[in-house]
Length: 413
Image (cartoon, rainbow, N blue to C red):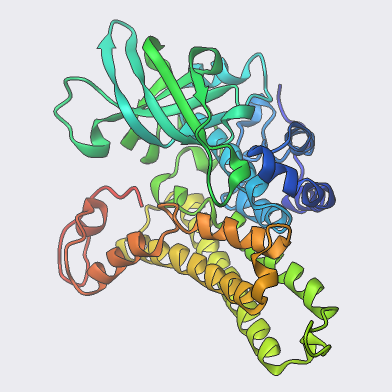
């Protein structure tokens, strides 16, 4: 299938906004069942929102980087878990589009609506090289959206390799019939993402074309660049990948503020019978949270503009751009977290109730800040080291001119 009428991002945004009322109505059920309802996935699919980075030759839109963030921001105001799945499943199509063309055909030739999850944290397992591919076995955690996916990509170290760390990993694409799902997703926030375990119990043959070295997948000019035109298939993917979840974060914060205002405008104090909205303390705290969310949005928009231009022009990010991206995506998250936490604190006992939508946003954004690409403690130190002239340990950053004069080479920030 080839796309002949690719919608604009504005058209897709309008479709996303049309889905928001139904997604909001199902938010409680999404939490209770710990997975996004099938009808929501189908609505997102029918709206074309999963096709953002699917190659055009399979009906995809090959959009510019950041489209998933804009759309997840809209959806996240209604349900953080749904926005999380939208952004990760849409972006995983870009990852598949960077693999060998035969692997892409395996996924989409017979079913161009197929979705792909990833197992982002290996508990155990390895890939053993054999003729024509690898024998893969293992257990992986945090496979968001695996209930709705027809394939999963997992990263596994290759037996016998002399490489270490991420350089030893190979990304392997596995069809759903070849793994089982273990439901261990009992969490405080983002409950509906269904980020469960994926288990391959016995050695499974994965053909060579469905695999790619982890750093090759994240680096510039992977195999998929030979068959797909969009710059998302040829750019250095690592520095971009850490930004994908900013859409849900912004959406959750904006939804929390919107719900807080709706409740507070009509709220009357239980003890004094006063209008809560008339309290100067409440007014000041609302203003501060709103300013933080707005500032976060501007940071993200500036970052996306820079990433888009670099990708479009086939430019690798400079060390400064790398460390500032790490800093800013984490700080944007921190601003949103602080904004939502302030609103919940202001609500008193009402803010503790699980049926209060602001409390749901609070749980979701509290969970989101722990994700490695968004976490302040994980990301901010790299900027601090670089700007002070201390080696970061990342060769892509340290190998180019930096304040301390170190030389650098392969960031997956």
